[in-house]
Length: 378
Image 1: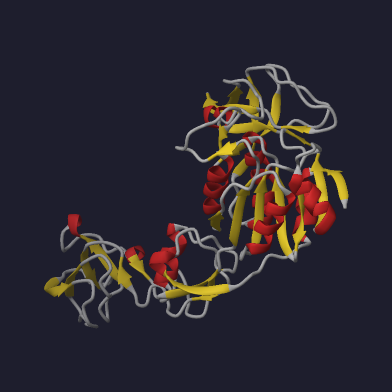
Image 2: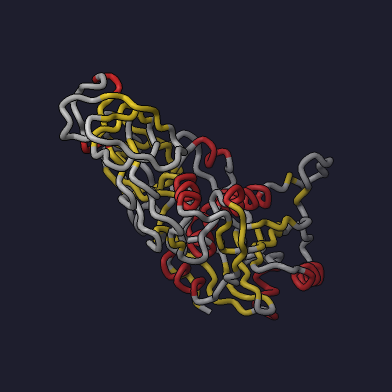
């Protein structure tokens, strides 16, 4: 087990444990944000035939005078024109045999013949061309391309099934009555939403009380690809996730040099990868964003690396990367950042009031006017 690793090393260690990489076939209507499992080759030329890029007339560029002989609409069968003949043509309609130019409708039948307003067969794709690669996130444009290529269904990566467990005697399900010393449980709902955002299937579990026996029983009952726990990973007497993993699991790393979010652990429980996240909500969200997401679904980032001009001073952290919450906006072409709430790791409101975090190197503070590295949440 490695302890107090860097963020980069934590991701590296996690990637040494493979996630089940199954495939399933889905229709294009189900494909948004899914990850392509295999390369896709086009089944057709695109365009399939020469066609008009404009409304107008299909003509021979060498003709000086033209007579209209008919109309070609999109979807029309093959046709042809002779010397001095022209056919009215609609955008996307197949070019008739003998025509090599388009006269724009606004120019009139005897107007200029334009040879550059023809979409040539295969100018976008040739049949057999691999245009979508394995690992491609199926964006709306990628889905349209797959349809253009003739694919009704596509092979995608099966969504990892991730069990989400919050631990702690003090946690109460929202909507239920709070007792003395109790709080509403919130981490699991945010983590489930993050999992859905990166293309996983969250399996929300009931809160587990602070008990080795209850935690063990819950972990043993799970049918999932990955386990994600919240709370119980620090050095306290009741941090049972860490204690159980030390005794009966296999821990690969514990603690990361980041603030907030320092005490996470990663390992396996009976062969199933387990990420133990801190209980403080900001910490759990940031560990997920910085480490869990790049391991589970590197194709779908949760933040972009940017450079920002600070308008407030921010304090760094001894020997740790410091992730202060900031609000990033653009002013006169420059990204600027301010802080709007206090920075406590228990203050989930700070993740709503801000849209990014600083990425201050260990032992580094920054002053107003400094330009620093930051992460801008997507």
